[in-house]
Length: 250
Ligand SMILES: NC(=O)c1ccc[n+]([C@@H]2O[C@H](COP(=O)([O-])OP(=O)(O)OC[C@H]3O[C@@H](n4cnc5c(N)ncnc54)[C@H](OP(=O)(O)O)[C@@H]3O)[C@@H](O)[C@H]2O)c1
Image 1: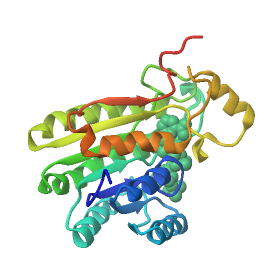
Image 2: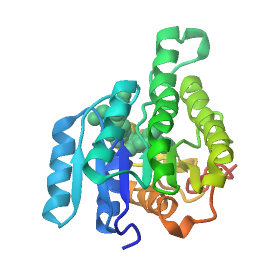
Image 3: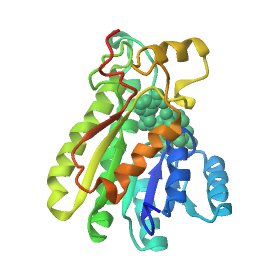
Image 4: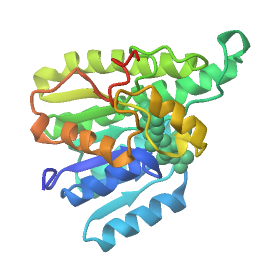
């Protein structure tokens, strides 16, 4: 029970890494608030968690919508009396292609969902976390844009690497108040984002030292560690769970 009595908000909980993290955090004793846009997926997951003896509330919405971020914080306050941790994990890659062909609207959309949403989350979550004495604020970044220049992914790389800068400043701003802030950098992971093309999966596997992709649960276990008190001296860090793809040059 590594999250016993902790109140945790998870974004991007309708699939992939976020859903795996929700299941794991519930097993470890956390009370959860789950969000993403697909309400049916969230409700099914909350029902599954409840059937296993856990507690999860859901609120569907878009992470780049400030009003939704404010509602989420209000819900945590109203239903749980506050927040001890947040896993800001929602993200999207956007259209792939060279910068010379990238529409401004696509660039802005990718930054909005992956980076601006992180700012909005922090803005609304931090007051609750501080009121609870600190806690853990976690963002899902990526190996893309952090040691790896993957062609065709400029907006995604800029957004995900921007999150690391955000994390470093937030960790410095609030460390004295007991708040830990970190970025989690997954490697290629078998989720909806990675699609289901075996040829693409084989290529992705090949750029990792471990020669395979991660399962969402493998990334969720690292998120659990960073959300828990076991990571009590980890802050301002970009923690890779990337199967060695940033060091592999084979
Ligand atoms: N899979 C990988 O190889 C990989 C590698 C490195 C980093 N990551 C990062 O890991 C995180 C989780 O992705 P995943 O791999 O688990 O992919 P996924 O299964 O596609 O999950 C993405 C999640 O984000 C939610 N989401 C997307 N846009 C949203 C929006 N505008 N508002 C609210 N929720 C939104 C999706 O839910 P709805 O569609 O229901 O809104 C979904 O729950 C992302 O930040 C991604 O960038 C993934």
